[in-house]
Length: 136
Figure 1 (cartoon, rainbow, N blue to C red):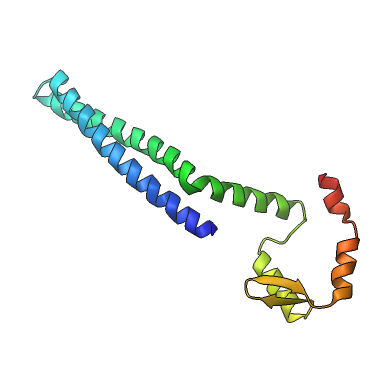
Figure 2: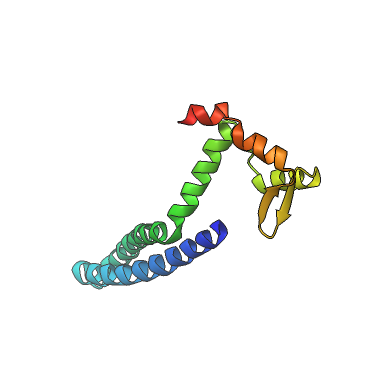
């Protein structure tokens, strides 16, 4: 799900960034060419226009990319970093859960995991975690 959000945000970033950048760059380039004349100033106006268009394209692309998926990716990575550095969870959670399946502590049912032994499940449900109580 996170990878899909990242792909969508990059797609939106490129579409909006390129379209806004090219259109604004051409408009500023033409205006700059008219202002500075058709001689050597034309190249200066076109360079300025394309540079300004590129900058505005990146800014608008980033804004729309954040709006359409990149925000979720950044939040996900920030949460994983905080939980890993705090010692609350391993970085590669899927590998941790698969290892628990190999040790027969857990059972994989479709895309979900559940404890195999009811006593173990009840023990973990009843035990207050000291690390979780520090977060509250």
